[in-house]
Length: 543
Image 1: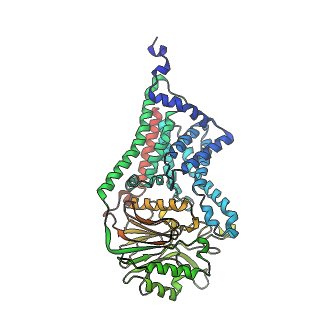
Image 2 (image 1 turned 60 degrees about the vertical axis):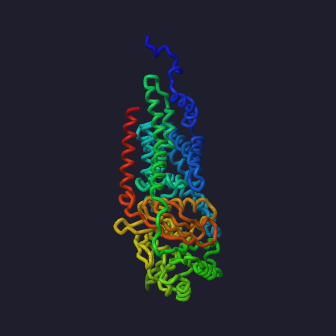
Image 3 (image 1 turned 45 degrees about the horizontal axis):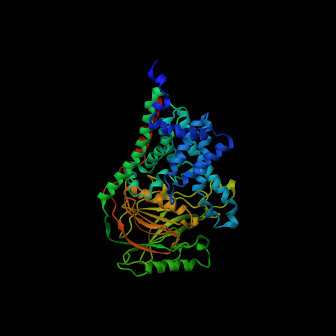
């Protein structure tokens, strides 16, 4: 008789097996739930994950959320069952993460109030298809344990990228954004982008699920348990290395320099969206921002920047307003204003653009940029003739698309990549590769979303673009958050949400050469996803 046949199993279990035995009852309850309980658990786990997003940043919530999701996926009998587990998880994640979209519709409650809950639910249901696809892919792979977790992390990241262009694209609340509270943690995005940081995060958060497979291993393969515990430690150690590397990078970078001879003034009027377009208040809103731009300061600003649609009328068609704005513009400088622009051609429907206008001290428009990535149902209505509803911002008319990403050359400023509203949330799509700008300018109006988590999430995405590209970013928002961000994604200065005021500051200097992610974009992410999936398939076979 062999010794292992007579020695009690409990006496031979190591500490890693003790963890598994303690977690197994919870794992079995989660994986074994069915019917409405399964739906409730999956949806609840998705809601728990939202606590990790800006501005709460409870990142440890992801451990509970993704560990539980892996248990549910492993408990699914088929890929179809895993798909629905992932869908309900995604539905909970997006409903609670995007609830603030309802606020935009409630700015016109008599017209769109009825649509508010439907819009949030419909968008969440659509976005939930991507977590569902990741869960189904994991189940189809036939891998569990460490291998299953790695395949899930790779699939989640791949479908986050798909989410950036499918259905017009909406890469909001990428998992990598949970680290924007730490300047050091987001430095790795210079190499692997926000998608890559999200992959590392999902792998670490879900890896504890590998400690409790469906059946605990026999003593003959107890070494597998130690390898699994090693994988869990390694996953979290990878995040620690990311933080340490980022801290060293920032220490070596120092405070950074600013562009000589450029002094920016950001104007944040904090005008409520319900009052912004009131005919009786438009003139007062315009004059208020003119006065804010003229306030004395030492040193004085060379360029004044207003938010998206800050001029509540067709500024380019109003000579008196342009003349007044020119008088308030610094000599040899510019006032950069967000405004609507239109063009009419006889016999054709008028075109309408959400634009940026650069006005000089003579009151002349010297440059324009038209937003190209429009918001569905906000700035245009797909299948308008069939649906028969108005857009939230454009009403009965659809906005026209601009020509796309461009590099503007404005008097007295380095070349700039202009971005309006949520154009800034798209990784690897904010600056031209063949005509690299020296900074990015994001004009936005988050007043649509009130005092909610939406503006914080939007600002976090903007900061990540700066860290990815190695370019400073200047963000001017109607109600906040307006800020100057350096090429490492660090906030130099900011105006908080819901405040009225001006922010004067220098323009940080861009990094001399583009970051690897800025040069190669998502090719690096695809390579990382493929390597992780291959490691998952190999680990699954060995297990």
